[in-house]
Length: 289
Image (cartoon, rainbow, N blue to C red):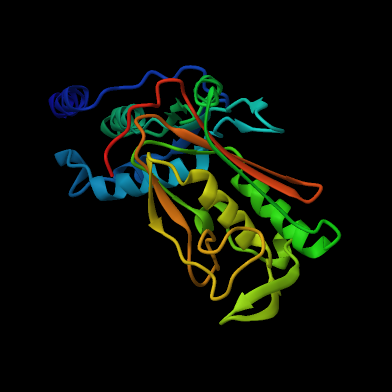
């Protein structure tokens, strides 16, 4: 039995890179398993030493859901003000497996430590500093600020889009980024165009945001993936320069072909909507479409 346990440990060390937890925010968790509970993880008789790896995987998934705290990316506040990232934590599966095997082969009631490791944000403040140095594109449209419902929808969707980072080769989706437009999320009923006719619907006005975005990102290093125009002209952009969107219908999406991430900023206030695109100083090189 001891020989088999040592073999298991050697296998784990040779096939896994063990992450030593550092800067983990939360206190370490332990679980207590009685002897019979431990033996229930045996594939056959416990004395034969065969682990039921499927059952152990189920335990790992359960522990992951209990200890996991996803990281928060750095983002933009007002204008180009940077809000710092916050790291998260995740289960250190390899380290826990070693702890579990040690307890399993002892065959006694055991308290097993549940190791965690730090998960760092994909976007940190240093990256945002770097990719807000050079303006690639900008576009401004105007709206009637006395129409409170439509103005609210424009401001909410612009805020949802503000600070979005698109990495090289990634595709931006307006619907996925802004999310569903619902009353629960604060969106109001306002005029929309349906089959060439005006109607009222939740989220009316957001097409001005997607259209302003389209004109801002219509750059050499951006590939348009999906864009549809309205069934009639709209007053806020020239003919053919709009991008209609609907949660259950058309989306506006594009792909970043630059060799650096880009970041989108959007600000709606006092009847003016401005969308800008930034990246780093070294963004001149881009892939061909």
